[in-house]
Length: 98
Image (tube, rainbow, N blue to C red):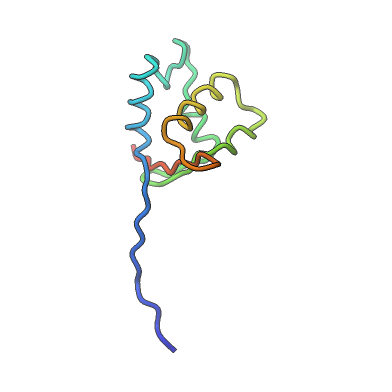
C-alpha cells in the first residue's frame, strides 16, 4: 500500500473587494448604499452564503433562484456575473477578507 502524499492544487479566484471597487467605478454607484439609500449588497451576500473571514465563496446563475431576491439585488448580481463569470453557470470563485 502506498501512503498518499500531500498535493498542491491552484485555483483561480477574484478578490471580492477588488470586484466591488471595479463595479462601483464602472456603474458609478455604491454597493453598500445602493441607489442612495441603505441597501447593502454585502448584507445580501452574507445572508445567502455566510462566508467566513478569510474564505472563498461562489456566485453563479443559481443565485437567481432565491425567491426573496429584490430587483436591485438581481441587478448587482447580474453585473458580477456579466463581468467576472465563466462557463454556462457563469460561476465566480471569490476570496473575501475583512
